[in-house]
Length: 219
Image (cartoon, rainbow, N blue to C red; front, side, top):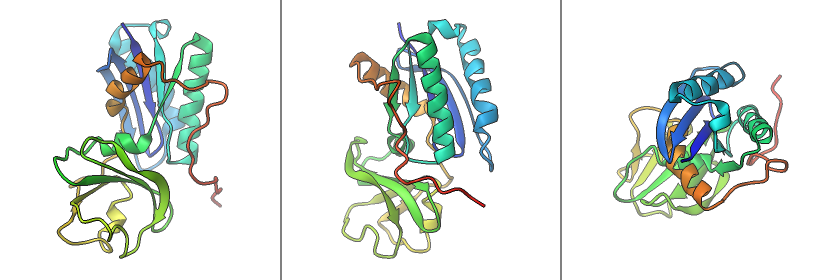
């Protein structure tokens, strides 16, 4: 029996899921306009553990969204996950945040391109097929009218970076979601359990989030 705590904080969605053998038992998340991760993350962790009827000592492993995304959000999530792993002596599992976002969209044909908002017309993105296998590596991309012109398939765009693409990327092949979707710990449950069974873990001491770009402080 494996109880895995899943944490995703790469975007404005502060999301925590407690899963038992890959099945979500409890989920708490909040996607407000401001980043409230520092205030909410540890409260959410306590809430899902209590709701599951276990204690923190019953945790088998901790999984964290590895990015890309917000520098501050990733630092908070990864630091918390590493601290718990170190204190409890349990393994740390890293999950691709863009894959989590891609899995929010059910597709039967074409591809899905998750987009996390960066600055101006830039997004963090990758390309996944119908089986959510990454077929183009993650990168920071500036969106122009020429973006994805070489792709003849139906393109499903999702994430908070997709909204700013609508004026530039239009036509029958581009499909947008009705609402803005964010990566969630809910999609981590099966992925983290699969990695746990394969002992696909990362070094608690040396693991760093996938920032993709250097931190730039605001004024």
